[in-house]
Length: 218
Image 1 (cartoon, rainbow, N blue to C red):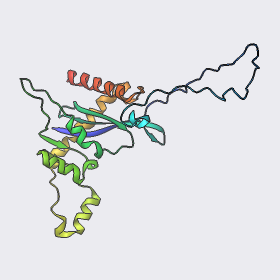
Image 2 (image 1 turned 120 degrees about the vertical axis):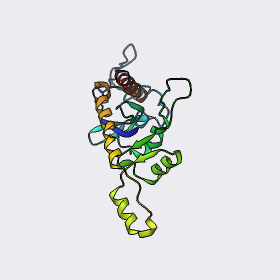
Image 3 (image 1 turned 60 degrees about the vertical axis):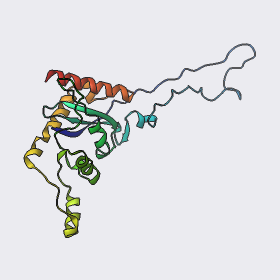
Image 4 (image 1 turned 180 degrees about the vertical axis):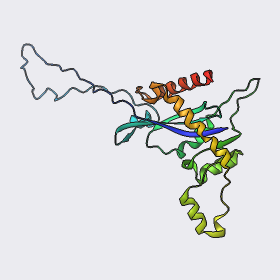
């Protein structure tokens, strides 16, 4: 069974960098700032990474408290992460729904290709929209997602034109707590709960290594 959720964490602010000061001295050169001496020395900046560059390309987004990141993940019924994606914190969960499911790879014990399709899926109201449900129906994945209050009110206002309500299995939805427990397991690793990595791909590797340890121990 697959489950979807997100892990929010706030990285530690980085220390300010320092720049060396150069002074020109010697015969024929006066001390102090002249017209030919620049006001400050420009330091070459490293090339920006692919995927937008800047803080957004490294999975960092602005919030009131500073930079924040988010891990979108799926987990199985044994609270083991199946796929991970790192995005800036303000990024909506539903925008990464398709990418998270397409990254699922469960190897088989014998020969053959790994499994990519879960038997069933449970998710919260953040994924209750038309594109997510249509994607699951197209792939033939049974899903249990509660309907949003505003969506339900809009459907009832339309009357018979609103269609039937989406199916919802309360007993199956009770098992969605496995994603919360999987997030709590990841938070036990300090490097994942509090981001110390500057580059996004390095932090993704840190989270993947923690997920591998969880899978080996369970």
